[in-house]
Length: 292
Ligand code: NAP
Image 1 (cartoon, rainbow, N blue to C red):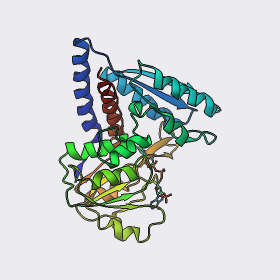
Image 2: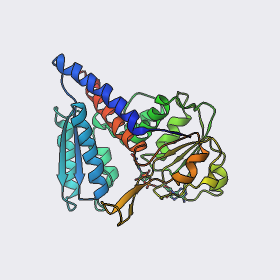
Image 3: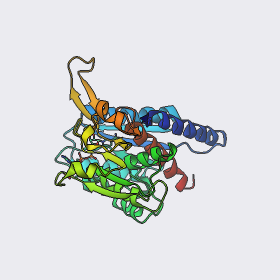
Image 4: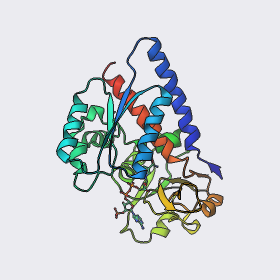
């Protein structure tokens, strides 16, 4: 078994981006500017946004964090999105999901200028992805594709089973892995909570990707010998014995699954850092596409 080290791979990408920014600085060019909107005080969301801001600082991007109280109105949020669309100093921005229930996430996502949509959630960018037209790929699926590519994981002709059909992970990933690209050319099965015979389907997987948010759901008896395992799940599990009172768990029973597989991503340190690296790549591209 070999660890698919997303942290190490993301550090490689961040080094490349740092050099690209130094080069831009030396040539008097603009530095990419990422803005992030965070609503409320959810611990997970705060951790993710802080990690994104920290990555910007490390690489030398400009960043702006805009925070709103949980009770912010949809109208105020839409007005801010519009202001960021028009702000020439901002190259790309994200609205951290999930949003409070009284706000329509789709409405907010659709209000973002697709050219600044560095999370790749806007329908225009998702449409471009399906047609394989250059645009912004959703950060987590793009991060997984980059992780596979940089670690020379063979995908052509492989059976890939994905658990979870969310708009931000499972569905886009199923499209990317089925495309005639490298990585890609997989035969993909996209599963969900209504799927029957899930264990049997998982056992057909050369590449198994879990994105459901259920700690330890994928057990050793669901995994074929030699499979590649990508664990997207990140759930905070309460554990008072830990200094923070919780730990982060993936969807895979790592201890028992790892000995059976060829490659496996850890949680933390697997897909999470690659998602952030993809966001940084998208932000640099957003600026370059404007011809700056
Ligand atoms: P989500 O919106 O939470 O949806 C969960 C998906 O899992 C749904 O499609 C659901 O099916 C499916 N599901 C639930 N129980 C299942 C079961 N027993 N068997 C098969 N499928 C089942 O998905 P998400 O937003 O992609 O999040 C999934 C996990 O990934 C979460 O832990 C999240 O924190 C994590 N995540 C991590 C990153 C990262 O960068 N590391 C990024 C994004 C998400 P139905 O559609 O039928 O309900």
